[in-house]
Image (cartoon, rainbow, N blue to C red; front, side):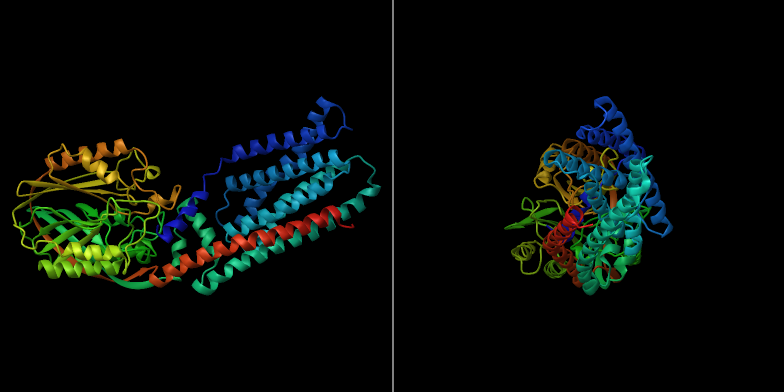
Length: 605
């Protein structure tokens, strides 16, 4: 599995939070129940019904109303300091979560009080308030793109409101002569405990932030907050951060153009640019964006490239468009094409078809599971096939149609590389050329979405007829394909009026923001997807008409991408930080918790 997509899998932890009204209702109900339970545990109070009523009222005032207030104030405070991500529903949910945790701490303290006979209510309240202060501070600092001081100040709002309301309600109408010393004791304990805990959080963040700043020149909290902004709002601000670590490269784009007397009918493009990293960032939606820049039917397949060649911004796709349009001006057309022929060598399988002075090679390792073909390997395939077959252009396509979690990239030195070299040597260059017809069809598959692994462009099918042989080129806008599904599709269309079929995916990474790093097509709704393939092939056959064909190869210059060095550096840095955090976080935070616990429950004040 690609490391970049493994990291993208972290997006599964970002979920849609409930609406504001549900968080508010939850705070009202939970605080009332907590107060009632607390009073019921204290047998010196007024009786069961009175305890439920007065306890619930107490909990509602001290914890419910104050938490609702803090939800509103937190959002306003962060917004006033130009923080991001914290919408009112996020703030209310955070307050509800913090209040619920605090109530649990207090209830546990009440239960222990009943067991050992020592009143722990106030200490439990203080301990819980310190914990939610630290938690809120961490959330605000890590996700809202504000300074630590602002995050800590905002994190204080909820515990201060709760402690203030508790003091007011608990001592209202009582003898006020002893309130001063109690408030002083509570305040000193809370301040010192809060400082201890929040310093531990500060130290932890600084430790994990250092590698990012040193290796990549970016802030880990900026990366996290902008990533969350992209997940929640579709913001592309993260691309600005990528610019700080981008690397300009030169790569190639190859294409096949089919035209009638009225102009270009269809375009098949294979850019050696990777459609990543995820969501709508960079080139993740490149197959759809690039195809939509042309006025005719356009298929954008997956060329040989890895995450090293992820464009750092959507605007970089314009360079691919301009390069293809420039190349189209120099294409030489003729009606000559060959039949589609398959070759295999060990794990490597290719489908080859010649068009005029060029050729297309559809490469797959199915039924074996293999990920991206590296650019250098693709260049080798291009050079070798051009030399052996005496063609000007060789359009290499990574069909990307057989996925398993352990799938690895095809890199120089892998055995798969030599399989590819051997299978290209088997190509017969002297194929008979005949007139060509093509028919096209596309459908966005609107009843399927990213959860089923289907991207914006859905499915595109081109049927090519040469010398009475019909070959279906089926392209899904998806990130790879569940292993075995390719063969299932091929078997399901065997009764149709076609002789050959190859199934491909664009490798779009827009589908990777839903639940996992990878989200291949074929995990769900297989029967429905096959229905689209069958219907599409039949419609494309109806669209068959004579065309002329030409091929082209153009160099894309100065494309800003992650780059081989920075892409590897980013992944290794994230991986090392995650590994180190597994050790540092428990040690640092648990130590701080123990110190805070000892200070609050056994401190001398």
